[in-house]
Structures are given as structure tokens and as C-alpha cells.
Amino acid sequence: MSRASRRRRPLALLSLLSVLVVPGLVGCADREPEPQTSAASADFPVEIGAEGAPTVTIERKPERIVSLSPSSTETLFAVGAGDQVVAVDSFSDYPEEAPTTDLSGLNIDPEAIAGHNPDLVVVESDVDGKLAESLGKTGITTLVLPAPATLDAAYDQFAMVGKATGHAAEGEDLARRTKEEIDKLVADAPKPDQPLRYFHELDPSFYSATSATFIGQVYGLFGLENIADQGDPNALGGYPQLSAETILREDPDLIFLADRDCCGQNPETVAARPGWDTLAAVKQDNVFALGDDVASRWSPRIVELVRKVADAVAGEQG
Image 1 (cartoon, rainbow, N blue to C red):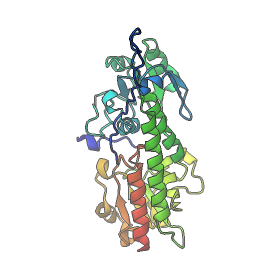
Image 2: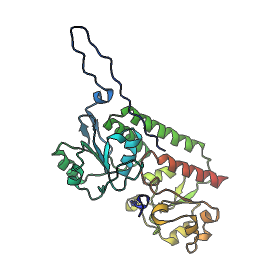
Image 3: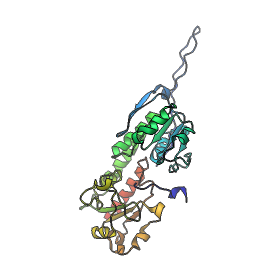
Image 4: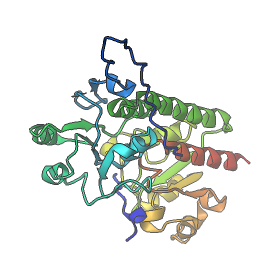
């Protein structure tokens, strides 16, 4: 199985250069020069705390980072901290240069993590703080960056990753640029006379994501209505399983497939499903296969998903 096909389901990047500013030396004939200090080093210690996660203090710029979150791995490289990353989990398959290992972000093994001698570990969750407690005994800091509930929370995490790694300016810039790109895509998209209705497919057994989820918020930017809401977008944690009968009855205008890579789904396979050739989305060629990662991660590549949705809305109006 290829790395691209190993995906967790419910469940535009440019590597930036790290900018080190070295102050001028102060000295005279009868005094030793002052030690040189980089701006990145001077920024520490820092306190970092994502929404829904504990605040931690990072005493000094981390030089050996282990990431057990694919989204955070992408963000680490995007802010210019790639050279500091020594190991990532088995699902962190982007960017290509990420040092993928057999570490797991699901079944976390503190001993295996410590074997990479990190000074900072980034994870998506830490139940009861047990990982932080275990690693803390050896002087390793654990930074928890959970799945954000909103786009604004995702932008905040970009800035946090920059700050946590000595790339504060790059993190702030990444957050700003990502938001500006998304805002422009939304502003430039056509506004349908009537709200378009959509189905977001997580796997071929029709699990979906409601408008209460992070991914649902992306569609909501365009005023799209989610057929998975079924009157309660918070039901089942926002990830209900629909029936084929429900989907056929709801007859969505747009279908987005987040199971292209894992499960080989595409417009042709959808059209071949019993009765699905009668759906408006199928008849009007409004079935869109998304990259599984882009459709599930809160990394800077979220811009690619927003662009895909914008194109779909524009095509439906064309």
C-alpha cells in the first residue's frame, strides 16, 4: 500500500527560510566583544496554548522536533522549521522530505518517541496529559495542537507553530497569507440565487461531515447547505453515517469525494452506484474527487480545498 493511500478518516506550500538577525558587536580596545545572539534565540522562553489544550512553556528554540500530527508536520515545514524535524508519524506523508517513521499518533509510545532524542514533541491529543507527564520526566516538552473547530483557530495554530519553533514572523505571515487567499477565493466566487446543497463523502459506506465540523465550515463559507445535517449538525460528533436512500432522497447539487486515494472513488464509480445516475450532481457532472489529505487536514493546504469548492460553485453556475 502506498503512503498516499494510508489515510485516517473519522475521521500550497513554500518552505520559508529562517531569518536570523545578528546584532552588531559592541566592543572597544579594552573590552571583550559581547556574545552574538540571534533574534530567534532571544524570543525564548515562550508560552504556547492552543484552544482546548494546555499551555506549555518552551524554554529555548527546539532543535529536535518529533511530530505525531500530519497537519502539524505540514505546518512545521511551511513555517521553515523543517530542518529541526527529526521524526514524524507514519501518516505524515507531506511534504516529501518529511522524515516519516513508524511512530503512531494514535497508539503513542513514549519510549519510541524518546528514542529520537527530541526536545519538542507535537501531538494532536494527549489524553489526561499522560504523554506530557511521561516525556516531561526526561526534559521533553509536549505541545498539543488539537483539531481546530474553526478556520480562525487553524490560522492561530500556524502562528503558534512559528512561535514555538523560533519562526514567529514566518508563522504570522503564513497565517495572514492563508487567510487572505481563502478570503479572496470566497469573495470572488459567484453567489447562487438559491443555496446549493452538497454531500461530503468520507468513505464508500457514506460516512460524512456535518456543517458543525471544521470541514463543514469550509463549505459554509460559500453558503452551501449540508445534507448530512439532518436537522442536527452536532449529532454523532458531526460525523454521521447516511444511507444511500437518504442521499438519493436529498438529491444534492454537488458531491465531494474525500475517499479518492483510500478507496478509489471518482465520478465514474459514483455514477455506477445503483440509482445514483438519477442524482442532479451526477447528471450535471458536479461530482468532485478530492485528495484525501487536503480534505481532512487543517494545514496550509486548506487553500487547495477552498479553491476546489470555489471552482465547483463557479462551474455549477456556469
